[in-house]
Image 1 (cartoon, helix red, strand yellow):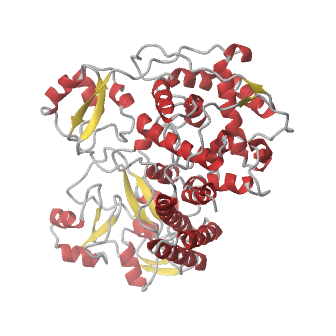
Image 2 (tube, helix red, strand yellow):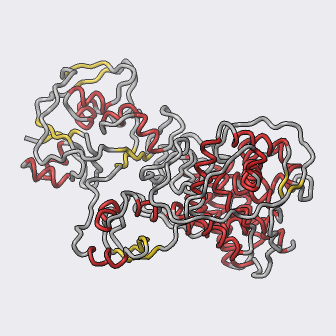
Image 3 (cartoon, helix red, strand yellow):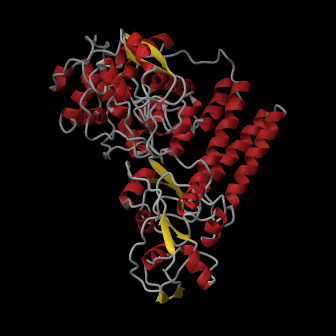
Length: 591
């Protein structure tokens, strides 16, 4: 196998993260394809010169979401409550075999094993029993192993000569997107064009240094309208729309405080590296761009269907709908910015680039709005210069903060006087789903809404959760903590016999009866939380004292505040010292 063929196999699998995690491709309104016209080549545009510095943050576009801190996917695999699917087990075994082959230098057999692992992963269904988490785990493992193979086998000088310009065509597909940009999306296009001035000079300089077409500097127009905090429904984030795993593979770090997918310079470096790899794989910018959108595995498979690499337009009707639009939208953007008058557009002046900046090392958590005030800056200035900070604050560790030139000394002089900022409470709490629970019952427990939980976890349906699944539950900011027991709510179900009705869960019954799930299970000798309509239960008395857990509470703290021993509190609620408690939960206080 020649070098290009081997590299194609490595990269096709190693970067399959994009196509899987995006559920196919990034979202766009569907457009039925017209008949294929002959392409006509036109001239390539030269980047427009950019004018002077902005004094305020650009107006956000309403149709592209600007995320508040984005909850991360659960870091642990959800409990499935059942046996591991055979395909999942075989995929993991194939990954283990690949690792063993790599350890002895047998890359060919390692790749064959990883091919099998990937195929088995694709055979797993998305719904139920933690399959999405399992698929993601296997995909990451395959990508990591292939990175090792890629590093061991790819020659340093194997790159295909880079095309320095992307050929432009204006066919029916492209004209359809031009019509969309100049009509229904006109306002968004013009605002994004103005916003592009903040970043394009930096992007163009990096592309030139990499020997790549500067036309690629317009790709964020199609991806995100040049918004650093744009978040897709598939959790692709930032101006270049990286999913977490692909961003990590190209050097973008993220944690609870910082997500470099929203850093324009770091994300641009990653995007250039990714696009260079895609061009190396396909030798064709159109197909490289299609793969950037929907994953190189699909584009490579379609390209090799007839045994030879085909032209992009030969593959057009075989691609997913959103990818069929993606490349024409990019070409439409290039044509409009080259000759706006031809398409009835008058483009605004681009905002001045973000230049003349200084960097200050900040070693503690401080709110950016506080620093704006200290430095006499317009509110939001530092947030604009430092979009990778997820909570509008520097992290509680050394961090290089960008500030306007001339403000660095003033900031350094004031840092020691500023108190360290501490978040008043977590923005979310993690809840592990138990049998019998619904999103409605979970929302009631935490005094939030089903919609808020669905949005926080990017759930496709409000009716599909499973035991063992971990959910990030939004809690109310500013909720008051209490060190004294909360008076018991008036029970709406009397102690004694109770018949389960549809929609009941143990937690909802316990709350209405003024008791606990543990007490009901003990009184009825229940081994699980599952209930059936018509089932008879004996509800224990609600006469005992109760306490409702507040944000920040611990079992030991509750025991101390309520004057009971920790052991007695644990015993009364059927808990151990490792049991997780959550805001809104009711605990029985022993007498």
